[in-house]
Length: 158
Length: 205
Image (cartoon, rainbow over all chains, first blue to last red; front, side, top):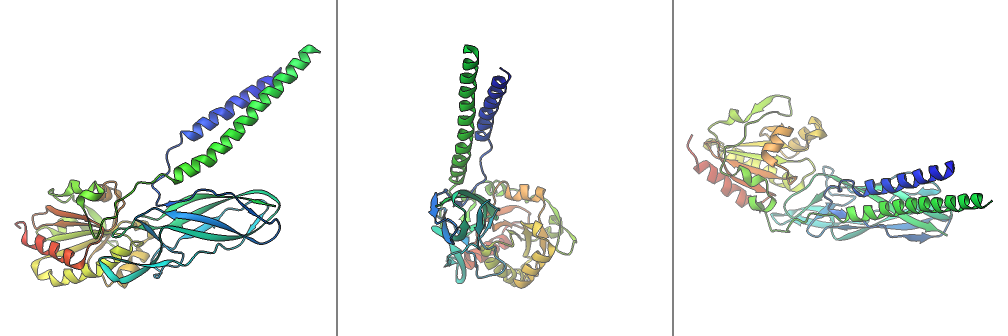
């Protein structure tokens, strides 16, 4: 009977937590979107995961290699994940962008969608890597403070 | 015997509820991330400098006296708005990460010299003062800026920027200390110069 009481208490606690989690405050304003797309790779072999991001229309972010050392590059930092050995994220080349009020100054940016390749060697099974994208966004005349975006990379190694 | 069987069925049932609750929690967490990541506030893709109506907040200052402040410059010296009393003034909020700010700052420097005889002055206020004086000094030196560069504080930020995070933000103040125009985002060099001329021509000392 005691076991039954413990289980009931446990089940109630879990449902409460789920509700609390849903009522957490909304995330801050974001200029980059990410939706986890489950992927499959070969187990115990180096394979590339693709991490796709979408920059909100009307904005751009500095690429991983902006043309000025004074600008904040887009970076992806990874948390350690059991059974996964990640390599260094490979960022795509950016595109040159100039502001309408001064076409002579060019910056290197991502706009629209961009994909970061992440080499991994993973043991067989389902995996999840927590990562953080750091970026700094501008529109055609203004800039916004640097932001971070929490990312969960889901994949299966077979 | 029946009692034991009943107890086992109860335990199995409750365990199932607990397990489904846990699964539910995990699914909700994953879903929550996707939902949160999709939350955005869109800003219209306007051409050139946005005006005071496009970003909200800053227009509150237009037509009012510029709020007083005393802020430290990059050498730690205190600088007050009242030090510039009677001067047409451009108060320019900028950030070290802000490319458009860095494009227009050399223009502000040029105008601060060109119109100095008319009493015109420029004050730069650094929004991301947490990057430290060294970085701010390095950037402003690299841009050739010699006008005062101050480090923002929460009060000045609240008074001037309200809740907006847009940079650059420029406040054109006439000789009487009144904010004549507020612009969010960088405009063309010509637009900027015409605003400078306007504040030089407006207001009584």
